[in-house]
Image (cartoon, rainbow, N blue to C red; front, side):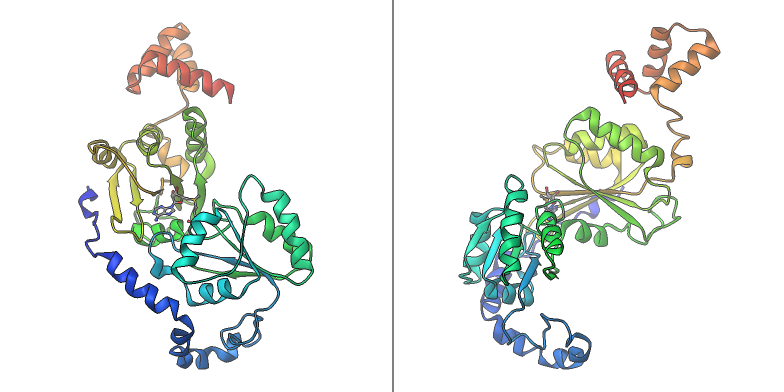
Length: 353
Ligand code: SAM
């Protein structure tokens, strides 16, 4: 088990942050020091309306989807700072949250709220302004807008209105977790059939029944190529989710829990799901932001450990041993290490699918 491979990053990042913020606040100077690079890339990027070569020109009109840090302010990009300074307005998931970032970098651009409750209406309003030639940035509380965050609707509205949409890439929790998980490109990824592939599933449903149904669907037919599955998860649900992964994919399923990425207490727990779950369960509480990753074997292989649904197993036992349904269910529950009522609830859920 590799859970002790977890590393608490002992760096006092607040020190480095202070230094960074000083640097970032004078990003125009910092940009000058990149002139050598810019010269090499001028040809390639010169035609882009928001090119590095043209950074001293006014920003082109359009929609800018700007990634912001997921914990470490050093992960803001020079281009994100320039764009946030230069746009007419910044549409924010939470204006108060973004204001902290803007204050930090001494950016005075006006903000407007743009969140899941007003996304559709605000997208139309912003699209009208964009059509009239505005330059608008969209940011979420942290990370890349549009990835488990608002941003998608305004991008679609801008495209529909014929307005240019510019990605300003940067931090993202899923990709950060994946590249350090040890799963990307590794033989630990499922059957090894396609270790390079991965699928991002956002948050699993919070209700236990729906979560199990989603995971079962992924076991049965959702991962035919054997790539890595990536989920966002809340700290108060991670133990239940790991228990579901254990029940559905088996206790030996290798998982990675990536917690508090880029922050002071960044940690990776890697190992068999049963052991990772026990490690987390032994703590007084589980806190922080979490990405869960695992790469199940392709469907044919996993079927060996859990051959069928409960309903199928019950039917098989009734047919092969002439058992009454309740006796067959009792046997299935025992074989799966479940209580009778839990197995009954699962059976009902499967039938309700
Ligand atoms: N748009 C963001 C992105 O690009 O990653 C994701 C926003 S989503 C609402 C927030 C979830 O992302 C968290 O609940 C957690 O699962 C994951 N997340 C965000 N920051 C994280 C971090 N620093 N470490 C681990 N997971 C993180």
